[in-house]
Length: 96
Image (cartoon, rainbow, N blue to C red; front, side):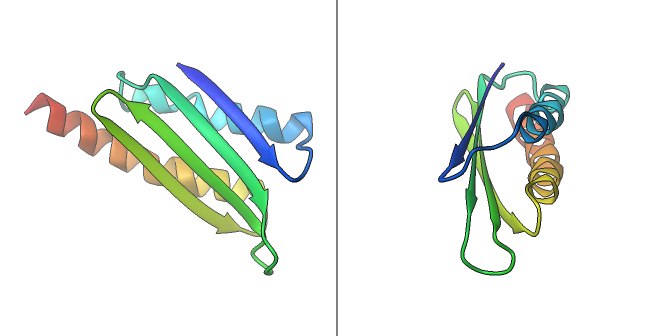
């Protein structure tokens, strides 16, 4: 599984990139058909100004989750929690 992280209009430090990779690398436990994961992190003008968009590619079905939070780490954790449920459901749907 390939993980691609991009920061839009800012430079993400290595610590943030490592955090994102660590959290997202756990997703294949929930669905073994994941081919790639793309993460786009950007800044927004409001007070919940960190935006994270995660695009998970699965054959026949792509999942896209987008969350805003006060920190990128919080937004990434929220996205991963939601993706876990969606991946389990997608895997169950494939099995039936």
